[in-house]
Image 1 (spheres, rainbow, N blue to C red):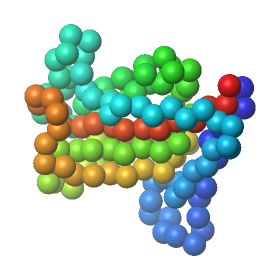
Image 2 (cartoon, rainbow, N blue to C red):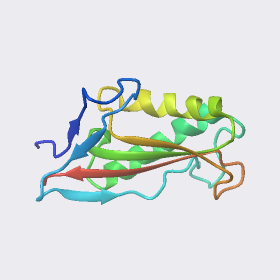
Image 3 (cartoon, helix red, strand yellow):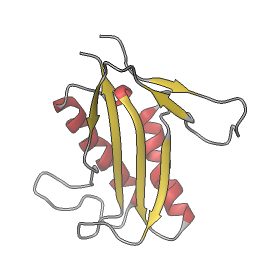
Length: 135
């Protein structure tokens, strides 16, 4: 199956960003809009209470499950938004590094945002994603 996502890197913008600056999908691609992936265990409890890295990893694990059920994989993701409940930039970086590493060479356009609170008890991280596939 051909990949629908094309990542666009820029030589005119800073190379400090650890992601592509844009991404495209052809008009005939099927877009998959995922709910924010939360660090929830199957029983509804929050994984990794107090640990930004563990929660980010659980978010990626849950996102991969949702992607698979939608007929996609992590390399079909076209963009992400990483939400971190902290005012400490180091906490945001900790969560980001887990997400970035999970995507490997597929460095999709991403936004990292510090927020005041997230929806579940003890939740520190949430990852939103959009994917595109060609059936």
